Amino acid sequence: MHGIKLWAVGALIAVLGLAHSQPARAGDMSNAVVTCFVDTFALDVPEAFSCTSVWRPGGATNPTTALFQVAGLGAGNYSYAWRDLETNTVPAGCGNQSYCEKSISTETQGDGEATLRVTITDLDTGATKNVQATAFYYDGYT
Image (cartoon, rainbow, N blue to C red):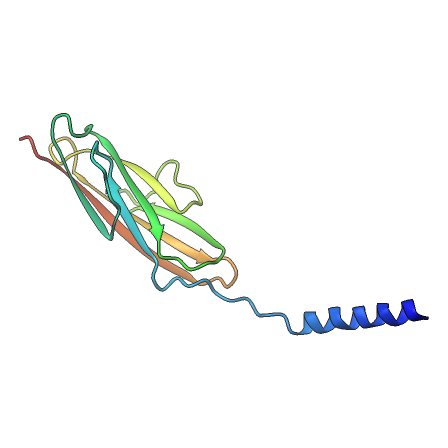
């Protein structure tokens, strides 16, 4: 009989715990930004919204890689959908991840610019936010 009472109390506690569970809460996307940097032989530092690098002989390769990453998200469960705004396509290799890489050439060997946008979706609530950044790569030799 004592075992049945303990089981009943345990079951009641479990039911009460379920009745007061927290509703799904959105991760904080209000401070989300895309940072970027153009990969050179220097110590490159990501910058929010736009970044600029200059090619010089021995200082970088041309073309090189522009790296984009989502920053400023609160804890949560997110998905990511990247889009290259110059070609209106999904950049190769940029799946459901918080970062994306894109080849970039200086303006003398290409257009010297790469703009990527990412749609962030909070998987717990369905809320979305679009953020983007532009990388610029200039030829400092010519």
